[in-house]
Length: 291
Image (cartoon, rainbow, N blue to C red):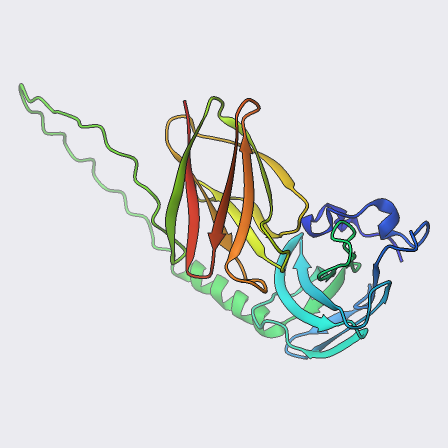
C-alpha cells in the first residue's frame, strides 16, 4: 500500500518511517494494518459502514480507537472496538459533507510500551452525502437572497463644543468569560520578556483518548489534536499591548473526564509549567502578558 502524505497529522507524530512501512519491523513492535476502507471505498451516508483491520503483537483482548479525518482534522470519532479485526454497523454523522479526501486513523489504546504506540492511517477515500449537499445548496441560495441592498447614508455633522474637557479613564482589559457557550475560568497569570513563545502540550496522566484544541485570544492555534505522552511543540506570538488569554477546549471527554493537558510555556529564558482542564461545559485558561 502506498504510504500516505498524512504523516504530518498530529495523530501520527510518534511514528517513524520504518514503523509505517512493511519492512524492517522490530519483532516487538505492535502494528495495525487497516484493510477497509481503502482507495476505492465510497461510503454513502446514511448507510452504515464497516471497518476491517489486522494487527501484529497486539492481543485480541486489547482495544483499538478509530477516527474519521478530513484535511488533517478529526471529523468524527468512529468508536473504540475490541481487537477482533472487524466492526460493522457504524453510523456516520448526518452533517458530514461529500468529498474525496477522507481517511480513517486507528490507534492502539493502553499499549504495553507507551513509547511504541501502534497507529495507522488509510489512503484517501470518498464519502457521499446527498442530503447534506442539498442542505448546503439551499443555505447558499438563502444567503444570496437575504443579502440586503446597501443604502448610502448621509454623513452626520459633527457637533463642536467649546472648552469641553474630556477625561479619559484607562479601561481594564475585558476578560473572555464565554466561548461557544462554555464558561471560561482563569487559573493563573504569567509574564514573559518576549512576545515570541514556545508551547508544548501532552496528555496529563493516563493517555485516554482526549481530543482538544488550544486557543490564543479566541483563535485556534492547535485544532482537534489527539493527546499522547509525546510533547507537541508549536510557536505563537503574543500581543504585547494586552493580556493574552490561552485556553483549553475539549472535543470529547476521553475515558477519564475531564480532559487534562500538561502545558509548558517558554520564551527561551523563562519556562512555566501548568495544567489545564476542560469538559463539554467549561474551559480553563491562563492570562499571558509581555513585560
